Image 1 (spheres, rainbow over the protein chains, first blue to last red):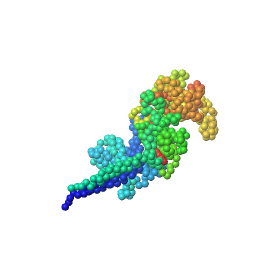
Image 2: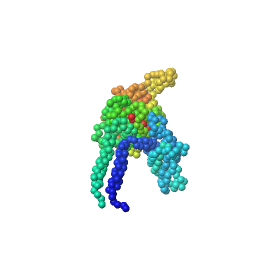
Image 3: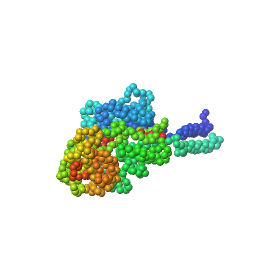
Image 4: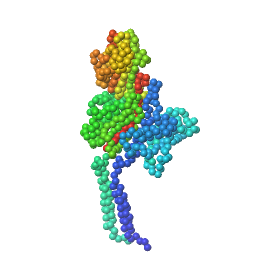
Length: 189
Length: 419
């Protein structure tokens, strides 16, 4: 027959066990100190570099015709988006800027070996839509060993609708200036 | 029924629990107490490089000058309104920064760049305790090694060589690093070729009568100097309301408050009065009047120079006053051969045959701004004996690309390495 003898000893045992578990947890947790420097520096560098590149590509380099008005020329990025020129995007973003071989420092974090990009354009037609501007090379795509990527977004002002919307959308979109959202993801494959 | 055998273990348990919890908390605190005492081997060089990159690319430095086109009277508490790149005394500079203004991150000024990478002005010695880059950019007494390199990616303005500027030491094996992509704004300049037929006809005063008339009835009449002797004057007009038109984006503004004024006048000999028999249009070339001589050899009679008597600056006719102040703006006048002259010119003036260059570091915001115009007047000698110059008219320094080579941007790459 079950009686209530030694009930307190059982509770002590449980409490002691909990205390020991808590102790182990806290002691283990207290041995490492986080410093802000050792986390995500690579990500931060890549994000900074990427947003710099998009900003530089989307800045006009001179006034178009200062006698007529003071509007600047169209930017490289606007032209690329309007013509959906994936080759030109990659040529500019990767070859001209990200992997520029004039760099003095051969920095592992921002050199280009194995870096992949893809880019989406988001636009507003009748509905919110998007299409792929650039996709990574399938031969270099190794999904089993990818590291976390960084995601960059940039608003682009264009003089008209984007170049590669589906036909139905394209016909219904008014030829007015638009703001497009360019979304670029960079990761190391 | 329970006995009281277990009373002591309960007390012990409570005490022991409190002790262990205290121990755990202390153990938790100790490492964070020691964080501040970590040795230098723990410096996060990447963070220092990032910070330095941000200061260089997104900040105009200090002093930053007044906002573009503003009236300095609104900023009268500032003893000196000029941005740091125009300070002659480096002790007046508190912080380096290459951005054009605080509203234009990633857009750098070529004038700030040239000043920043001037290692004869700033101390760049690694071992030096007076290293200016540690004091005004890295902000640390710690002896960081650094390498800062700026290069262009797209080509520079037409006629300019590629840009590659660097300070600091070569990169070691391990270092912190950041790379920034930037745009470099380059200065506008004007070349006036008087040998061009259209330009020539515009500025060529055919006779003395026209000279006198035109001085008072030019496209933009100037209430200037007394017309004694009908001096031959060529005016460069800077209209503040045009230059600082708010609809022009900052990177494309002709901002003479923080950019040099560069004017090259070419082909001036075509404006000389060549009715004189001794006048030789080409004293250095092959085809002289006698048909003799070799290329590059002096083969003519001594040319008759035009004489530039004075260069004056003025707003609404008060020329002398501003001319005195303008000598502080780094004005340099160069003719074909001599060393650049500063103002005031010698009493007899300087001889000019074919070219005349005017450069100024900047124009004081008290004299050119949103609602302030400035005239720069070249007065040539009006010698009654031919030959003399036959020049008059007003050149508009503005956004007309036919007159002025407009400001352009080039893309570039700034690398910061810290160790």
